[in-house]
Length: 150
Image (cartoon, rainbow, N blue to C red; front, side, top):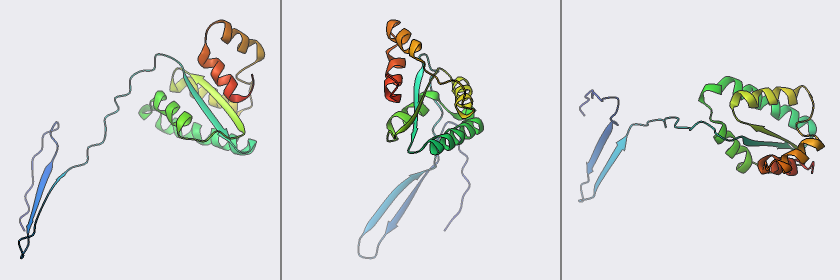
């Protein structure tokens, strides 16, 4: 077996081919490529994203908010808000204890998470719901309905 170092340029993928010729005429051929992590091609968020979070118990919801805050703090520069919103909307089952955030940036969402963890004012009050409907902010209203405050 020969070993050889290959020089690969930054924009090229390293590929290798392996051939095996069997005694009875059985042949196999495989081409493998080096793993290339996906480049973060996230586009900047132009509209606010709905970030729903739910849990079975209030204590579980509080613990989940803390875990989310810690994870986002540690990985803030690598995260796309739209991807997080999609995962929270689609990738989880809605449970009885609910909290929703509407944010236009990861930094904004972190500030809202911190307020929720510290039991600050609820995100939605009755007058805000009415104003959201009147101003045509259907996204905000959908979030309010999801939380069960409508």
